[in-house]
Length: 216
Image 1 (tube, rainbow, N blue to C red):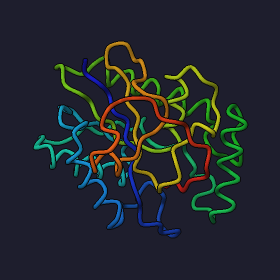
Image 2: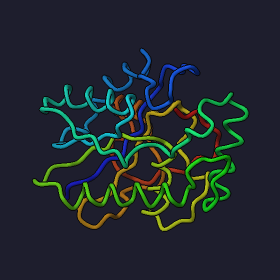
Image 3: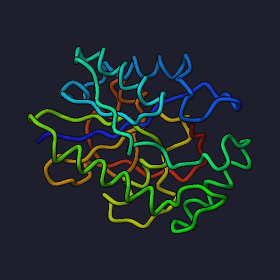
Image 4: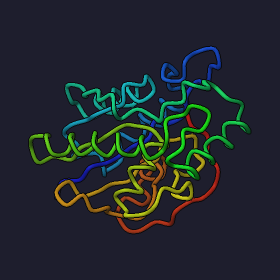
């Protein structure tokens, strides 16, 4: 049955003076996306959607080029949770903010978009994508770790909690669900690096990670 793959953008160029949505992929991030194109699980992807943030768009373009597709579709509601109230934060302060974001999902912590609002937004966006897409091929969505985790929690029927966040690999992780039933095909995140190398190419269960991570 056709599947939907939610893929988080990999490594970015962190520029505190530049708005976070405008950060590009760095050299390592681009290389990881290029390597992922060789993974067997992406071969049946026939349509690609991306957040409007630059790093996601660049990842989607690499995937589209590698698969010989004509392009991808930008969906603004796939963006990361709105953190414009604070902008760039040093790592320790950022990690504390992310902890609070997940721990208080209905609260706007220091002006950030509440996790519950961001979850409703991305769940609706993904539902529109899946329900309105034509054809029987797989769908790839290139997005972000925070809203991706919120989507995973909803699909898994679990409460919003940071312990379901992606592993600490500077992004570049994915999970999949069945296009028809919206049922998750495995438990937790997988690395684009492992699958690009031919490991974990099946869709069996994997464990969840609760380690800290960097997100742009």
